[in-house]
Image 1 (cartoon, rainbow, N blue to C red):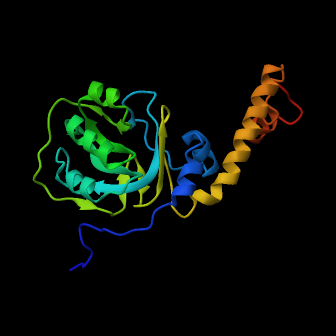
Image 2: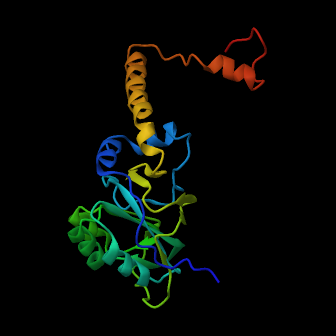
Image 3: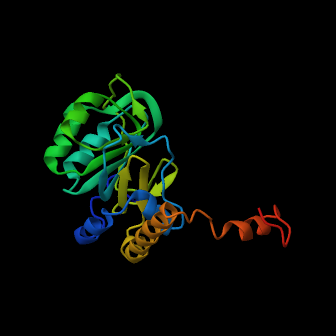
Length: 228
């Protein structure tokens, strides 16, 4: 028998100063410098496009349509945590709504990412609390099935470990491993600078992608000496 408990209370988190710096970048930039990985499936999106979230992952696994363990997680999470909930992609019942989101905001929880459904979306929008989910459903959940807290979870096709860095905007949600995020920040800053320079060059008329012809040749689309 395993001695690993269903609830793991203690784990390392990304330091607050690193979260603050990393949160200044778009999720797309961080996904790129992380090797184009860590982005959750596009089914998980902001309830409203203007919503943004950044913080440390507080992981929760539930059975579809049951939110018992989410209530337990809320009682345990620390300010700045993002609840990252493996709801198995279920859309038949909402796992959270206005009451729980109001409590999350009051507790200082930075936001919620659910591989499942939410409800009361208009009220949540008025609250200005960031929620990312597979969608909405007016049906309420049950509160009676055990699950796990503080374990690795699979959310939107991405493995999320407790304490990892989580960031989301209108494009979706990206997760970067706790051990890697700080080391990626210089590359992220350089990419922002390089992309801004490229956009300015394009606006000035330099629309030619310098890498394109060699890539087409490597792919066998163009023969040596051929051009577009």
